[in-house]
Image (tube, rainbow, N blue to C red; front, top):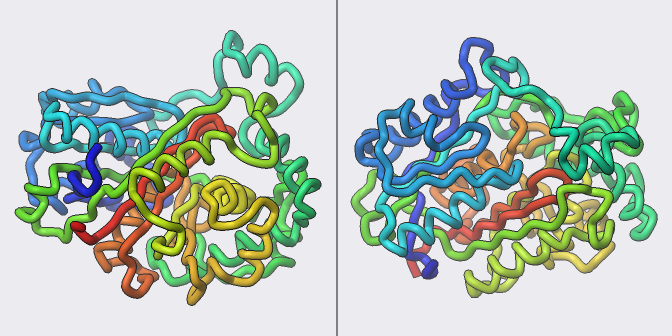
Length: 380
């Protein structure tokens, strides 16, 4: 895609957030979509491209009465929506469609119309990991984390500080699920889930969703909201089995996706005003800071402890409260991008002054995939 040739012109989350027991998964997708359409001043018939994960784009298009010329069902976990943005921008540039709707919706807490847990026993992870006892992300993510902690002298207190600072951001956000202040001791005294993760180091389990609408930069000036342009993008995948990562101390997918996004955006790290790093668990922002190049290997813990990512810090991180305190319905990537858009529109609850460049960086599975989007509010 060309730099700044595509813009976000509609962005919204579901009307309610957190616990929505009266709405199914497809209903959450539709609620978010209708809110984004209203935000952009559009009707479903104005959309000619659809992208989604969790449900089929065929189901989404039929449910909303859309007949698209472009459909994307890429599903690689929580960063799928970053990949959707990347693919949609390329499709718009190529003339495959004009206006793309990207939706997300999950009944993670209430489980209304949600799918069953568990993967296929015939899959690679089903054959070569599941028989040995890991059950779901809390126990599977411990495999790389324990090596990372040993290699880089990262303590439980360092992980706890990530959660503490993100709760400080969440306290400024009326829509956040958890807003009460917490301390490092609070985190360390919360219930053990799987070593080294305590309850407050783990993401929330919520209901909700969000949607984005993309179109060409030329058309963007005709919409009611301030355009947020796609400056650079990246994506990559590594392995469906966390035990088979190239190196437990970093994510190859993170590094490849991040470098591609920076290169296509043509920016330096010092140009970044605001950062969203997918935080299903407290270790992910540490990996992200290092793999994106904001910190050298092993230095992210000190960067966080010195409050560089906190309110008033030089690199505001996860300013909505993140998956640890804001929302996490299962695939968090959409919520990260929603906050990037809000920051660049100047409408965020915890607004970063004069934010011009924001990065949303996502993970899929257990370091299986990654997507990185560089947003800007300057046409360039």
